[in-house]
Image (tube, rainbow, N blue to C red; front, side, top):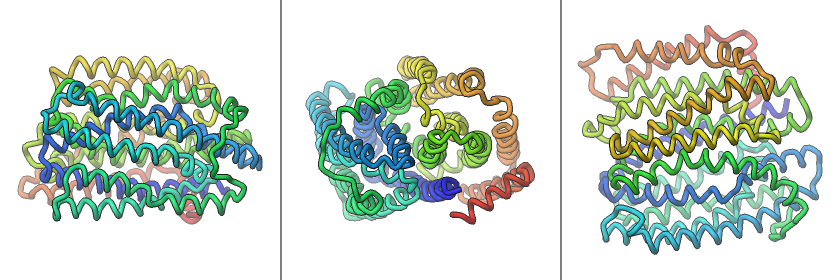
Length: 497
């Protein structure tokens, strides 16, 4: 099946890119903290947190466009594809201008909004100016990536992102060796992302020669996609908020040093979290196609087999990180940050909720997500309120507690209501056959290895020995648990990709 090949390539390349991003993010944090200082480095995280939250102005169009592009391409409705592309250029261009204006407005009152010194305020104002320019370019070109992904070329789009990442690695090295300022480092890193735009334009012209790059607003098409987009946005705004408002709350209620603590934890956890997003991005175009074609067999394959393989990968990363979390923090930022170990382990456990990514791709490919919206609103509001009120007591730990509560609400809702009642699929089968065996295996291996007494080794030795043992034992146990059909399916996907 062509979709299987596309999914395999998408997952493979997205995983590679996420590993590169994860290694870069992991390595850059201690280097930049040492170079800029803990307090000043927190300014970068604070500025990024504000701008990331403004991505909500997308109104859910990113997922919506992929869905509609995929459906119309499957039906060879090229007129609507072109109309939606040109409409998106107009829509995103308007958002880019609005985003830039908001950032400039925030920069004017930054000294009153954030708990920073006068010197730090000047730096953060300059960061907002840089973000205002890069945000406009990023918004206007958003639909390029969406159209290429809708052609089931997720792997190609991910592969292209390696170019700016390589440039960012060079920029990082120059920063700590030549001595760039915070503003110079951030400007070069931000604008390097646009190096892939010429390649994107060329690819679109090859795939869809009928596409026009002239902005135009098609009212009929906009009205058709808007209801679905608003559905996505209505739960996306709260989902986005629980992820991105927590560091903003820290900046308002605590200090830039707390933002740095948050970024340290996030740098480790993001490696696992990105893996969940890997599957969502790779599954969504193909899921949209099988839903449009009413392919029940393919849907069942995504639900049960897809969830099983995602669970294996997520558990491998989550418990693998937990095995070496203490040693990892030591070599990452130093023993003075070991007080973050407890919060790191708790945050890592929340990543297990990402095992629902395959089923979520089918949900997003459908049309009615109102029940999910209500649940997301409730869980996000509760999680954010907990974060806000607990910051004075637990500081960065409050962001972890709030997120744990949010994740628990979400996963219980899916298992006890949405999957069995709305989607008519067996939650018990998903839990017992596609999720729990790999969680139990990962937890057992992790707990056993954390009890090992290897005090004679240094941190790097412990990471290598304990990490290597976990990989071998967990891999062996999973191989035993997998059915012959699953092993055959994996081999077929590897062969296709």
